[in-house]
Amino acid sequence: MLHYANAGHPAPLLLTREGEMRRLDAHSSPMIGVVPELGRAGGAGRTGARVTLPAGALLLLYTDGLTDVAGEDADERSDLLERTLAAAPAGASAEEVLDLLLAACEPVPLRDDVAVLAVRLTG
View 1: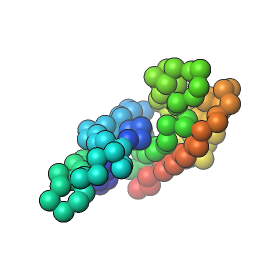
View 2 (view 1 turned 180 degrees about the horizontal axis):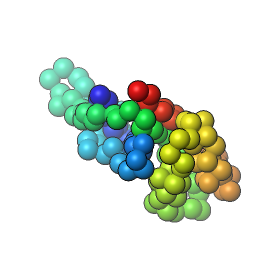
View 3 (view 1 turned 120 degrees about the vertical axis):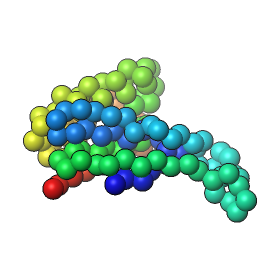
View 4 (view 1 turned 90 degrees about the vertical axis):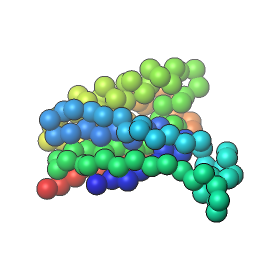
């Protein structure tokens, strides 16, 4: 089970062993620091979501430095990322998936900070 809250970064992506891809965007909150009352005693707090992570699935988390590139359409780059992930071979390791994603996204020089985490769930 994954408990998550989205606070401004792109929604995590979940690719099942069967090739079904889901964007984990059930709960979206303002970026951290934008609404100071969130999380304070008496404040509204952030809402979160839960999702069951099936065995063999791949969970991908990334920052917008991978998709928000000067001179490029961020939605098109997000679509490229999702299409590349969906087309990854079923048995590919997390490292192989990262190599595919970075190769697809790098023809344009990445100038912003980029953080990417891919986790293949065992079981």
